[in-house]
Image (cartoon, rainbow, N blue to C red; front, side, top):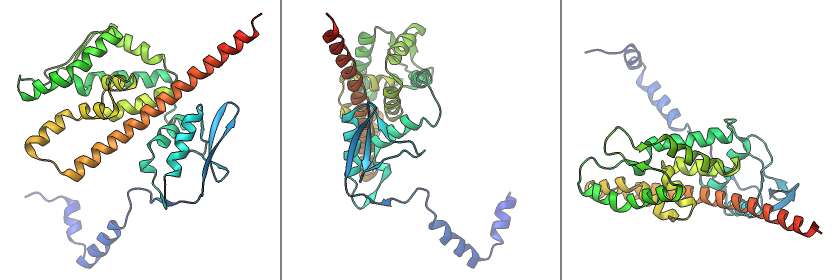
Length: 285
């Protein structure tokens, strides 16, 4: 039997030393410990057309030290509520809206809007709802009932031709259809695209993200459709209730945060354009 050198040398370590080492390893954290809440109240202020979140009059900052500045008052208030909902401890892992905004502000990967769109378009090749069962079984019937109407809606809404796959070869999506979807996504600004990209990563689906963003699907329905195969398998093999339920609620919270981010960001742009148009009308003779 082959024994690696590492395993051989590991076996030579005295048991007392191994026990001491294992205790140290158990005490190592793989994540940052939640901080104690250090502020009493949250607020927002306007600065040069943007909105900032404050914690006891101190400006909130991103992980890279940038001032937490967003384009929408409603978005700033939503983030303030997220911080206000933290009780004794500040658990950043539950603050999805803050996380999306921080990423949009810091842009750690230095990506532009074209790169964000390309990232999402690549998801079409592995889109959750574009891979059907290879046999006309119970799962296939369920996919046809639940997924196919969403695919048909997307084809009609964006005038594209998207055919789901029934094997590992992948879905059939023409170059023209990809370009149509790409141009549509590019109609959003980079700020909103950060939220859409977060949603695509959450659902592993461009189709479901667009259907949710355009309110064809509710948050809960989109998440349910993204987990359709998993829930189908759980029906036969059983489920670990606490694990599956926690994962589902986490996904719902992530998607809800991304959709709120997009909707409030888009609403702020529409409001600015409307106010500009009204101002121009008032100046006209």
